[in-house]
Image (cartoon, rainbow, N blue to C red):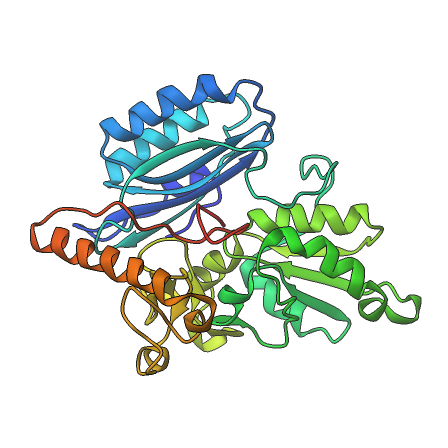
Length: 335
């Protein structure tokens, strides 16, 4: 389940009994002393058995965490008590098993890395479009639809007709747009530009960036793909494929059911059943996408890591070496 406001959260049922509650959250708000917030927040998460990653920066907070429903509620209450975080954007879903290995609270320059100076979603952002209104917007032939996610995310699912920037990290998006601007906005026309991402945070920055670049009519999907998949019935959906998420579930589908993809622990890209049938796939060591990018020495190290993970699993222990991709890179947390 995904919620955009605390009120929505209070009026909805929780995850299935026995499942872990997964909370994807963010808020753009000025935070002057990230270090002062980090210590108590990490201590609370650890005391409640929460795992996942939270990022703090002077521009706000972002991350995904998992735990029991009660533990997640306590951590969300704690974050909402931070000045400026009362209207925290939270999307909840469930997982059959704990989708993270450990708990991290990190201080960063940005809560989602774009690398552009002067981008402030609090000052200027695109028009939010509710999931139930999204189909009409992107079906309009005058609307340019842009997927702001990374290439490995787009590969497993997207909206029909959306433009894929083919970026490997969100940091590449500004340069892609500047290079493609004349083609996208040909003949001086001012089309509607609709953008989307996993949970909404990247669109906060990408729409603010486009407005700074002089594009006036910019829209983005409120709550991201996750809210759309939860809200819009599958028979009415324009989504094709699955949605990559930044934890061990790897992908989710309509109704936020866990998807069919696994994760290559060598390159952190999603792998399909077809990929796993390839002779270039070796569990924990390589997949068709990364086989030619890695040396045999690297694959040997990955095999040893895989062996250690298997050994830990046999002993009923968690191996904390797994790192999941983020919006800005192939490690960390993202929305």
